[in-house]
Image 1 (cartoon, rainbow, N blue to C red):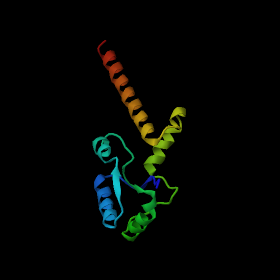
Image 2: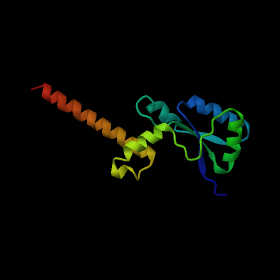
Image 3: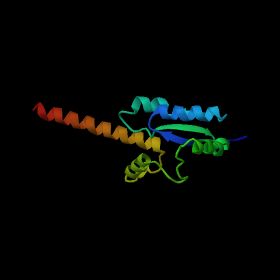
Image 4: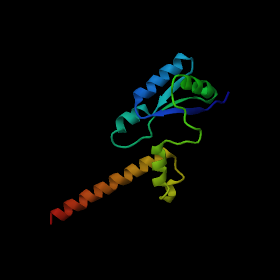
Length: 130
């Protein structure tokens, strides 16, 4: 069987994702958490898109039923989180970023901001030393 992995939920904090994973596993649904470590490490500096709960596509409908029965809000199929809309909006203005996946867009924007901040500090220190 060629079943692919799909995202079933996204959370800002890893603990929220762990609660859902525990619930799904108690119902016999095998799932895992993606981006847990990167969100913990980089969470205070850049929005990594949140912690994602992923599972096999064949188990998605059962997982959604379990989530709905336990009070989880199920987003519309075409609805994107607000953070993704914001980053995608910024990337829309940079032509070559439009074709990249969200994670690479975020990484590029982070590097661009870091380089600009470094240049600002360098030029400022050069001007103040004269």
